[in-house]
Image (cartoon, rainbow, N blue to C red; front, top):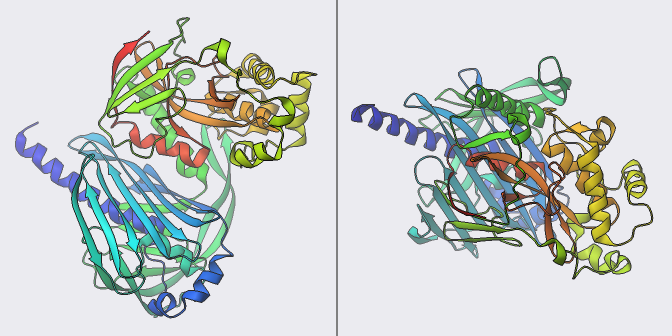
Length: 530
């Protein structure tokens, strides 16, 4: 490619990155409308109303030129001492004749009274990662830093006058304010991390309409993708920023959630069900990867989907060098994994020492254990650990066994031997897997974690990469607590899992989607395998 063409392509990519920074904010609700006086004149009202907030998640398909190119989501998590608002955006953009993956993730932490505590935004692409972060210093300043690597390239203390609003905070507040109305204008005191300036941004409602949104979906075996089952009609209002030159605009509903967002570069975000937004995009990516098998070293498909044969050799230790992406925020360090600088070393647990420090049956079910491992024992959406059918099956499998390690092994062996290893293309649902008895790594892991939790043993889902015959594949496995966290792979029948499993993320479906931002950007060099 000529130098002038490459330079033009890079300029185009920078423009796309700028658009993504805007879109990420819009997907999280930049156009949510709230009066300035609502923040500055009624803080007590806002704090009291915030106590009624509950966790929520909204999903979007990202389209360009009528083609789905990515996925976006906004989640609100309410914790005992704070509220977290997380925006996530990932898409494959055509740049210089090839597709390049770009992603953006922003996290805003608020007090229970909705005052700003801290924020962090990260954009990853083939260019060096861009990360910004900051924290509130009372109501008088924001301490801000920008990174283009491990070290800060710019750090400032910016003075502000009263509380400031970052984009992800706005959808929380609008649900507590007045309903939008055509012709109404609103002023919002914002802090812009890109310019480190505060300003009163004016939003205007210029239209009102009805939208039909997908409420639930099902997997169509004939089409090999998810299709709409139920829809819902939602009233929405069109919001614009009159003084903005780029002309971005969006539709929002009465609850302060975005319905549709448009941007001049032909990019549109449409709210829909998780399966249509994420799973269908992933299925399309899998098909594209299958048609070009062997062209890359990191594949988004599972090893089962790729037809890879998991060899007899079980790695005891595996060391790799990671590059090409900012890995801050991933679960790379801890337990059997040690991550330092750009080097990750995984050491397989020794079977003889597993469970040596595990508590007994009664201690495992004590109140202290239930509090300590509240999340790892809880029931989650599509992981029905407290379902009577799941519990009965788990009890039938383990019989009279009461030793936690033996229970975990029996359940592991049953899932590995009984669940057929096939690609289903669906969202992993533990109870559905128990009925169908088939699936890939996601289904095996989801059912196993539900069975283990149902008997009071902490377990969690791990996702990352599996090294097979010189290539890295997407994979999911489990970690079970037996005095220490032990990695086990019920798909390939490994207890413990060998060191070829590189964990990047711990958690459910909402976190697993973050792994996709690495695909196409992450570079891995194997340093040692033994």
